[in-house]
Length: 133
Figure 1 (spheres, rainbow, N blue to C red):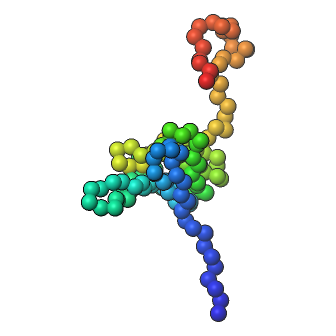
Figure 2 (cartoon, rainbow, N blue to C red; figure 1 turned 120 degrees about the horizontal axis):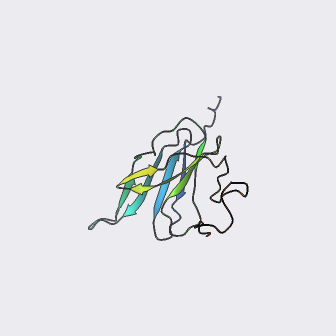
Figure 3 (tube, helix red, strand yellow; figure 1 turned 90 degrees about the horizontal axis):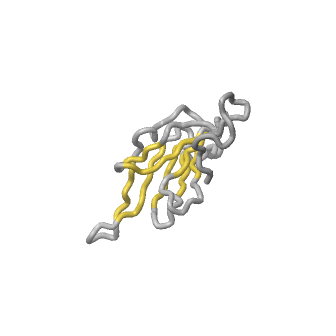
């Protein structure tokens, strides 16, 4: 008897980094669709599972190889959706009882907040400058 080939699980799960939030995000690996669930209290019961479906930007994307990455920021309730094939990223979080995601973007082109030394009409220290973290 031949065994059926093993298929990879179609979903990945990642907890929100916020240390006092019991939320877990789920991503469909091929489409990038993101949803989320968390535990909620309900009087007279052992509790309920509250789930949030995909809202703006969290629905299916172009087919790819998607995953979720949580930051190490202990007060962050959202996660990053990454496309491992293209390097594109977006941030996803729960808003108005739906998971929403910012548009996918890539840090492929370096962007500088400071004028280059060769820019005519500028000099170091002139005008307001962006704050460094």
